[in-house]
Image (cartoon, helix red, strand yellow):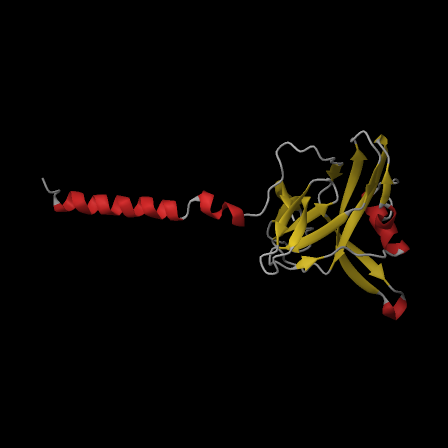
Length: 215
């Protein structure tokens, strides 16, 4: 017996939806997705303890050449709990909410280093240039340092801090443009939101999410 027009129409709509779901099946597009960090990895991983990024005003130059510059810095502690000595090289990157990427300041001047050390009140804080190298095991050999960024505009609503070098986990993926293999490294992402800026009030970033990616 032929179906009624309304029933036939509903059957056609449901069929189209099912076909659409099959067309975008994850099995088809999975190969195009970026690799994800393993839930249980056998690779080494350094313990990373950090504090909320802080804004810093620092005076450079003297006399008529004096200039007030603005920075953002993030202090951290690294601890090697892997039961073997490692060679550690930190790598930081700050991505603004508009997509702009800022690399940390290199070749930090003694005056800027003292300003950060004074702001933190941490007598064990070492220059970032002194962090790279052999990291011995245990909390007694932990290192305290910081990453500092300049050129961060006022009025931003958030940023992400990418920290790599904390894990030995890697993955290989082909570059979609060149077809050549690219080595991705497990990277920590700290996603911060900054509430509306008020006059004469220091912006206070709030951690929205912490997660790992391969990049």
